[in-house]
Length: 313
Ligand SMILES: [Zn+2]
Image 1 (cartoon, helix red, strand yellow):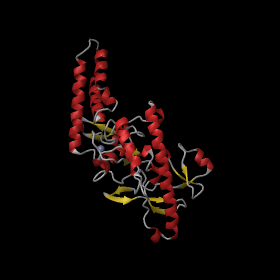
Image 2 (cartoon, rainbow, N blue to C red):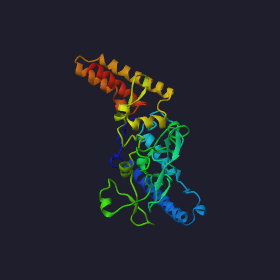
Image 3 (cartoon, rainbow, N blue to C red):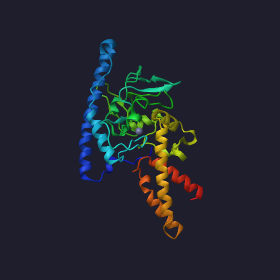
Image 4 (spheres, helix red, strand yellow):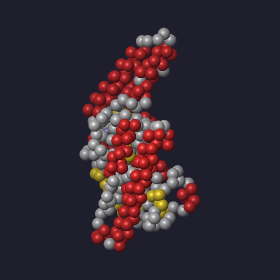
């Protein structure tokens, strides 16, 4: 995983800005609808849990599917946001960093459904972060292996497993301390659905995020593409386990990227007269990895930087 600097407020072309504005409108409408679905269901559930059944909103998958297409092309260089595998052909779906329909975490190798509190502080099984189902900060293009099957699915571990939040009561002074505006419930005045930034503050998630974390602070790729948790980083350890970043085929693919980048780096060192010029040319050769444009860029950058450290550069 490599850090991605993406801010839709800084889109340069008018075409991209127009696309983003249209997508944001569709995302906002879909978010309003799913929150309304939840509030209606919750009222019915409080009156008669049996009759209400499970909370099953009608998802608008085209909203997150459209974003995935756009992100793959414009931001992620057709790579999985987590493992960096190249995926020029993909299914039309996007990974929800915080799961939208159910939340689990591993407890002694068993998957446990997370517990949370409702708007009145009563305990209930976490229904998923439905209000973030169409939030761009929660939507990442990911490969099938990272997202489903033996991969992530509904896992979202926290440092403390009792801090999951759904809809919280906030006073006016508490709202002023938030990092980002929450969404106020229409049905329960004074109750709010928190933003990704504020949830991160209270929940302390253990799954790395390429926009919101700097993965290189946690995750390092050594020789042979081997994944290493920097100083035993819990975020890296959980991300490696959940996303299966230690898969032998992934390690081999990362190793190939490392060798290719290293070959380009060393070849450039033969040009130029001054050492500084050689280093500059070599850096230009690997700039595409620094920008995250190539598959397994993080592994290639780590390998080059480890080599530079042996030279004392
Ligand atoms: Zn992946």
